[in-house]
Length: 199
Image 1: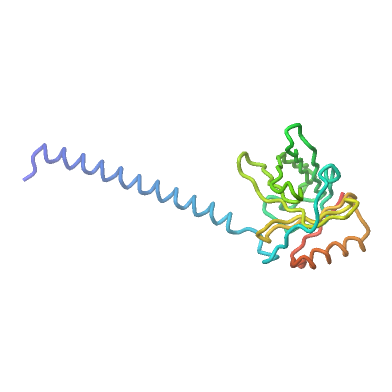
Image 2: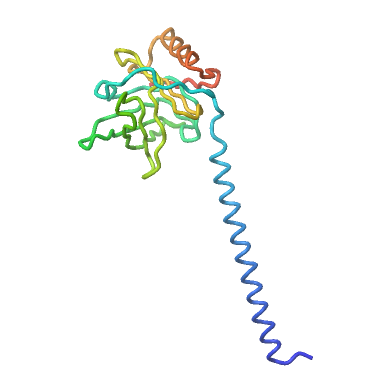
């Protein structure tokens, strides 16, 4: 036999049970969202170089500053559809480097991202950390560059990122092929490279 008190206890119990179910569903939703985020991170570009070499030369930062045109890259989600890509570097009073990346999206819209770079290897100046998102920094290694700073090949330790940069928007095709071959000599799978349309 159920008394009124028993019914109240059952109702309270049912409410607690329902709350637990909702909490569990919320936790499941959070887990699914987290897994989705992880999936996005995991679906990065395939490794194109499993043994990324150390930078070959020291870098004169004053000569490295200025505008660079992207000639080819390993395509990343954050650069999807980008053409006419440029990167501008300028030295700040605190010794850090201001970064301004621009690209032309499908339809002609110009997208830009501002970031900050700092040196992590002051012996060569060839290894930097770059951030576009507050405290989160990524590696930026100047693996090789021309003696006159007319071109640069940039990567990082994982082998998933690669950029070929030039001071001119449209260097001669023979020059482009020479730089692609240079990236291959550094151990990169150049069949993964995406040519960037310039300007």
